[in-house]
Amino acid sequence: MQLFEAINKRRSIRKFKNQPVPVEDLKFLVECATKAPSAHNKQKWKFIAVTNKELNDRCSEAVSDKIDQLVRKYNITESVQGWKYYSTFFNSAPAVIYVFHQEARGFLDKAVGDKISREEINRLRVHPGIQSIGGAIENLLLAATVKGYGTCWMTAPNVAAPEIEKILEIEEPWQLAAVIPVGVPAENPQARPRKPLEEVFEVKE
Ligand SMILES: Cc1cc2nc3c(=O)[nH]c(=O)nc-3n(C[C@H](O)[C@H](O)[C@H](O)COP(=O)(O)O)c2cc1C
Image 1 (cartoon, rainbow, N blue to C red):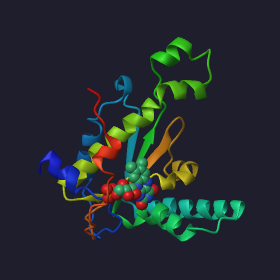
Image 2 (cartoon, rainbow, N blue to C red):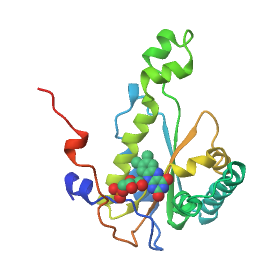
Image 3 (cartoon, protein in one colour):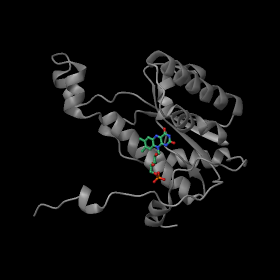
């Protein structure tokens, strides 16, 4: 499959066949992820693939519990069911890749890191560590599409990031950035709409 075909064919998949994903394939997907560019080539990323159903169930339950806590604390009544579904379904996939990141420090940190706040530094750098993770994840999703797997890039589970880090025994300074269920798709969704190019792109000549 050509790159452009994969870009057009990729969909967020939320229903999976009960068919295991071989570890070799998971390794290949992560290898493709790590070919992405990263700020200062620091590669501050870590990928944990979990095929153990019980572990994925525990992570999904932790997200569900956290949402329940937030719902109670802030008296939330709207969209709770949808929020829960879109945050927790990842345990229905035969494999889940948990993506962790660390803050990537660069020129600005070295130059003025002791003079201005982290908040101001982050505003000036616009989170290069997170941007690097984004490139890696997209590589992974496209490689999965070529291999015939469905995926979904998920950040909603991050509400329970500390709990998931504990379950997966991930230590600081690693932080959960995204959760990606992987499996053979059991649905074939239409392409979701995109804004017209004229709305998001302009050329200044
Ligand atoms: C950063 C990011 C976070 C996302 N988080 C979730 C999520 O937590 N749960 C979910 O079901 N989908 C999530 N999505 C998937 C989007 O809903 C999806 O990409 C969008 O609706 C477009 O559909 P498509 O991916 O099929 O083109 C996320 C996508 C991105 C890029």
